[in-house]
Image (cartoon, rainbow, N blue to C red):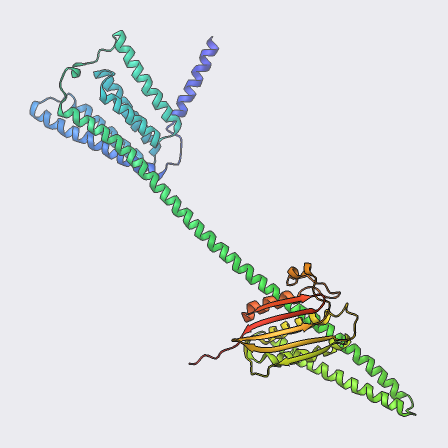
Length: 468
């Protein structure tokens, strides 16, 4: 039994230490501190008024019985204010709650459990504890109030406490109305201040949430812009790589052709030209050599312009188309393909990068050439390029009569790295679409039938010179 009693004694002492641990450091909410200052100010002001009133009464009647008690209470409340301002707000809050509980018990011992003022003081004490302190201390205050009410009632029943109940027989006076009204107003002020601080906290929370949302949207915009910038840089790099790939393919083919012709020419010159047949063959080889040399020079001149930069200028698209067709003639001849360039003859001007427009045309023409890879027929191996203006737009149409595009591939035709050719890497048409959309503010579309062929349409706004 002794061990059990000691165990419960230790548990109770430990619990009380946790509840009344005034040395514990805990962060105190600034909003609670605002409420604490107002409650301390109201309490101190009320006691100060009571002290002044008692001083006036004592001055007239020479009775100082309750004046000393009121002064002590006033000094206690001032001490709590100093304690709160020194950084011990939680300690001051607990003592303020105990202060009202103490006077509630004193009121019950003096005038009985049923005195209304004691009930109001209990309510104020529990409200202060619940708003300004922690949950454990609030439970302690609730239990203490219930225990004190029950205890005083029991002491009254057994006769150990004999409170004065004469107030029940007396009529209600103005002082009583003042005390009851002030207690109710005090409860209202506590509730109002708490709700007001909660609303302010929610307002700050909403503002923080709104600022966070704005910051999030701003960050998303920045990420999107940066992503688009990186994608554009990536496309430009792929565009450049694709141009060098095409350059390598064409130049290697031309040099190979030149080497073959020169080799044959040298062999022919070494032979004895005994007959007209050998001379004729030599002349044919020389003519082919000059033709290949001319194509190669055109190709080099065009690529010098293309490698200089991608600045926007106003230019005639037909001139660039002719240049592109000139250096792609060799590739077309290898496939026995003929170019037909049809222009309406009007003076057309568009604004943009000459480099990128040439790349658009070369990719579409190269795509048309590749369309004949699986076509075995020898007739109608043409690529028709139509150039005209209509309704303020420049229209470019490129027709081929090759294998066409399968239905299941039409949705993927403009995706990067998608290719149906044997040698392609799948960059050309993707770069064409992005260049037309982003660099020329135009559109690109196509139509294809496996029995007829494919047509690509590019529509770009014409350049209009604005009058000053």
